[in-house]
Length: 196
Image 1 (cartoon, helix red, strand yellow):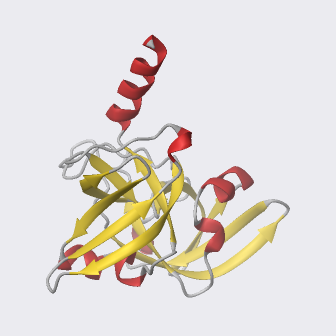
Image 2 (cartoon, rainbow, N blue to C red):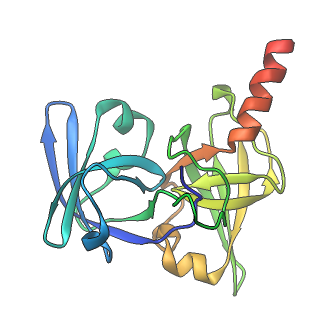
């Protein structure tokens, strides 16, 4: 389980194709603390560390993961948001994040407010996912609060710290982002849907 509080950024150092799988090799500031078989969220996607060599580590994304996330768009030199699993004795600063991307969205607008930024994300509502104002949403693994909720889009506000320490500083209009909707909201929506 994750919290959506990003620990740092990882840089793509190598991409290796093997059948329908892709092996991504990353570098990050805490590679020396990682272990083989450890779960780490990359832009909100839970991946297993399969290899560590010096300051680099490797994870594998299977075809299903590549189809449902933005990892397939990564290029060497790109950065991703990084979060290790929450320790059992740790603080719960964000919200419950599983590291399982529900669908991707598209950055449809970015507004600079000279001290904060508003990002509007559009998504396909036919997949049954919803947001609510002041509810939680995870974008590229970052736990955020919804400030404006519509049927097929929502907005979030980004403070300078989050902007500087996550991939939000790299995002542009039309970029694809990973979305994990609030787990409580998903269960409530499913239960209500079954009763109709």
